[in-house]
Every structure is written in structure tokens, then in C-alpha cells.
Length: 146
Image (cartoon, rainbow, N blue to C red):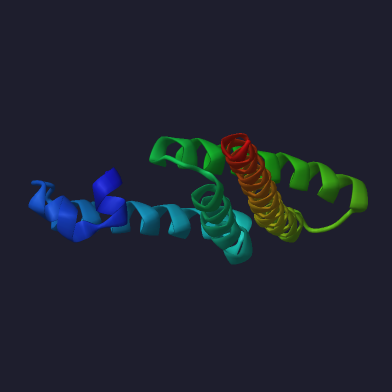
């Protein structure tokens, strides 16, 4: 499933029946969307399929972690959306979709901030290592001269 998800050609070479799996996946997704639309609406179905997966793929390092992050994000979005919708007297579908969007944007922003912090820290460490090496080489040179 992992190789099929990311590269169908590699999965096909590896012996996975790509056409059958793709067809089954399309049928299951279609059935899920078709059965959920009358209950919760198009907006919520789209938000629940796309937004948690988008966040999970950006922040996870493995396929298993991405699945876990997507499920947890979806559940947090649903429950917090329902609670918020109840207290603010707003439509639940739109509220859940909005909260999932906020979670996605917060996750992407946090990821960018962490990456920027790590780059600055790495840059400072590299500069400090360079200064230590330069000072060390100067000491060795001064000892040689004496």
C-alpha cells in the first residue's frame, strides 16, 4: 500500500497489482463520499479527506506516522468543531472544516518556524566551530614560532 500510494510504477515492478488496487481504492473512496455527502455535506467530506492528510504528509516522517497524524487530526477537528458549533450556534459542517483549516495552517506555520530556528541554530554552531578551529590553529602556529 505504501509503494502504491507514492509511486505506482515502482509498486508495479515490485509485484503489486496496481490496476486492481487502484480500482478498489477508487470504489471505496467513491462509496464513502457518496454515503457521507447526504449526511454531512460536500464541504465537510472534502475537508475531512483532504485537510488532515495534507497536514500529516507535511509533518510526518513515515507512512505509518502520517496515517496516525491524519486520524488524530481528523478526530480533533471533528470534536472541537462540534463543540465550537454548539457553543457558537453555527453550522457544524462549516465549523469543522474551518477548524481543520486552522489546524493545517497552524501546523504548516509551526513547521516553517521550527525549520527556520534549526537553520539559525545550525548556522551559529557552524560559525562557532569555525571560530574554535581558527583560534586553535592560531595557537598551534604561535607555539611553532616560539
